[in-house]
Length: 374
View (cartoon, one colour):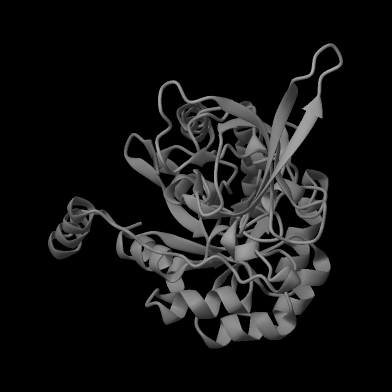
């Protein structure tokens, strides 16, 4: 995912972003690991042939039954950010290999996480001492700069803070061997900060604080980065209404089109309600408009009875008819996996497509070990 001279950052795909089995199977085939947040996600990943050593249980606040499940199925690496979590782990999985989740500056992110998860830098020594007293093994540090990070320098500061925690842990006698730089990487090309800009600052920081000679393995938890652009939503126009607005100085009228789709914010497009990292969509007709075809102001609604269910409040499209299709790109992350069946509307079915060239490349890579495993 990110290269640094003789070392690399190994991806542990964030299952929560899109848990479709074919996606997990394909990523597992090409050597990715997996960031799981619950027993259910661990069960699914294991059922698809992933080995336990390719999983990090990256939720800092876990149910005891889920910890016991991880222990029983060989999942060793898991995160913590509090003394209470350490006590739970000592009861349920005392052989776990622990990663301290560090709270870092996420003020430049569109969706901040450190208010809910992550230990403050000043409390890390106490937590590491408590882990030592409980005879637990701490092997590294993780952090997350937030979703939709708009300043790549946030990664550098977080890596610097993690280095401080590494030093504390090593002074206490822990063998610190793992750095998890989390997620926050953009999944589409038009985001204000490019992946290449982020990678450049991460690589510089890793070279300064965690050079290859230090022997630390580095992983990340990309979700959007892998799947956002992989999915296009096809939504059907199920109803139409034409609003005529009379003009004051003449007898003609303006037309505003209102279209109702079979999917909306209670379905695949729910991120419009709660995810500032992806707050707009741009539907476009499946059929190619004629060059001289007029366009009209439109409001596009979802199918439910709720007036909150609006997909686009103001856009311009050629006139559509009931039965026409609109397409929406970049619909792979935090869409179908968190859709509901509110009002009795079914979840949108998923159809998986792969080009022959891509399939051939994956088959060759597996057969001839062309992909270097993490």
